[in-house]
Length: 152
Image (cartoon, rainbow, N blue to C red; front, side, top):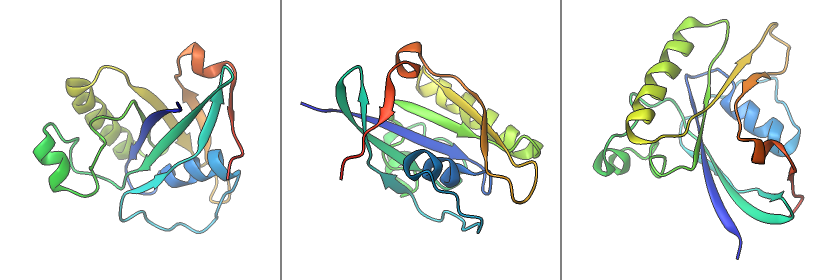
């Protein structure tokens, strides 16, 4: 049986959430910014320690607050399923203080509901630069032996 892990990607508009997901999944970068208006789910498979896992990567548009109850989660279609995610990737622009403040607020709200946080920051040093990961905190077990499976 293949295990499924849900990863919610959260952050302010324009910080590169979708770009990071597309870079990870497809090794692709689109120079044209298109705002994410609705929640979008990507479903790649990953091989870790010779075991296959299905990922459910949820690209979440900006939400005003992290849902603290099931009723809140299901009343807003952008939030559906994010309270029970196995991991959160919080993305901010190192050149935009407001995006960092938003991530801090969301992180605090997640911490009140969940225990494990993954924090990732991105920066765009020029308008033509690809987003890059500045810091990414992952458990050692995920850093070792993780590779994307080409299944389709």
